[in-house]
Length: 164
Ligand SMILES: *[C@@H]1O[C@H](CO)[C@@H](O)[C@H](O)[C@H]1NC(C)=O
Ligand SMILES: *[C@@H]1O[C@H](CO)[C@@H](O)[C@H](O)[C@H]1NC(C)=O
Ligand SMILES: *[C@@H]1O[C@H](CO)[C@@H](O)[C@H](O)[C@H]1NC(C)=O
Image 1 (cartoon, protein in one colour):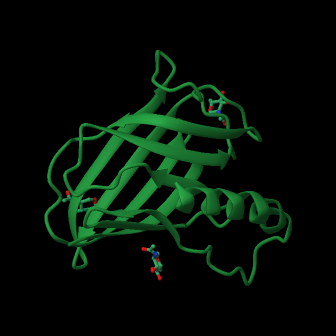
Image 2 (cartoon, rainbow, N blue to C red):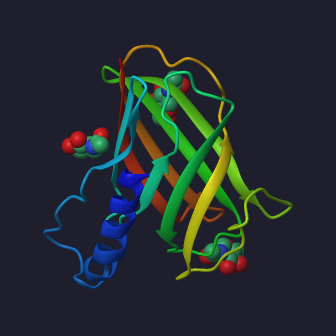
């Protein structure tokens, strides 16, 4: 919760400046803590050159429940009539799992923010489905990308998950 507030604040403060400063010698976005509790630590960093975003998981646990509560805040770079999430999981440098999940589909808008327009700020706090399982001990790298039906990036992040 506290982590999220900080991330969200940082995101709100930094985004407009970064957006107008143009590309070039851009520094990496700061690393945020999505959660750190119950033997699990999730850190993430935006890999979208244009903006950072806020994300947190309410109850961190290595026993992943089928329903987890997340908080997510971002300024939309694109209309999100349709939105997809791609996730790639790596362990010790090798690919473990690829996963693609439709978040918003025109015929099946799963979340209240589906259909929102470019330039709007969205903030979501609520449940998401997860494949409930026990995360094996270890350190994982995760690449996440949210994109539209036209393959335009909405958000991109690389994360490190440490389960002990
Ligand atoms: C994201 O990737 C960069 C570059 O590979 C790396 O330096 C950084 O530690 C990663 N951040 C997280 C939170 O995994
Ligand atoms: C995606 O592409 C379709 C067809 O090319 C176009 O009508 C639509 O406006 C595009 N959507 C976005 C978000 O750019
Ligand atoms: C995941 O996708 C990447 C790139 O398409 C591929 O190289 C890798 O083998 C895939 N990993 C698995 C576990 O299917």
